[in-house]
Image (cartoon, rainbow, N blue to C red; front, side, top):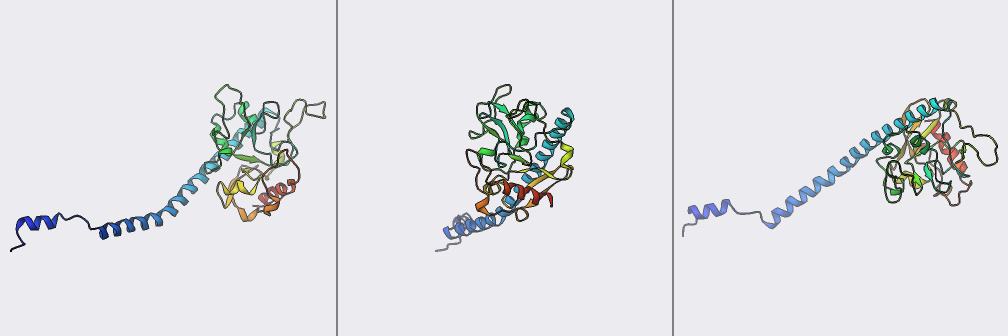
Length: 253
């Protein structure tokens, strides 16, 4: 029988892939994805770092405007006894007050609160408007604590009540922006070692009082894990030395 008839030749031409051929194609595609995915992740993180630096510069610009309106005074510092508490926006425990970074928002110097948050962050507690860190609707007073995604240099303790701080009969005088000179004043969160892991992983973005900003590798400011734990409640001063060491190291970069 002649198997070279037009019907037989057409069937051969339209024969589908065999199972082995399909598996080979799938394997090649999987290999290409495995090769490209790390590069794509690196590109995405690189873009996030640039956006993060842009956020810090916008925060710095807002602090400059705040300083111009308040005789060079700025709320750069920390709350309570612990220098790990240097990233608050709003505090219910302080009698429902805007604090630290929140003073910029209350003064209407920040139009988009997203600039308070790093785009690389994976922890909902330090992301914008999550269930763990809700941002209020315009004109509505928050009903929960709000954390910023960035930290301020914890050199000065800033009381929650500026007009009549505890133990004083006079208004509190905040630090002057010009007094920080070339020191690091803002950065990605540094309160605990885990704050680094949920973001850029191998370092942080840092902004200096002279307006410059750059990425600093973890190796330049790393601290022993035992001395760099999660902040305790109620706040304690046990790890203030760790925070001092971190920011002193950032000054040298």
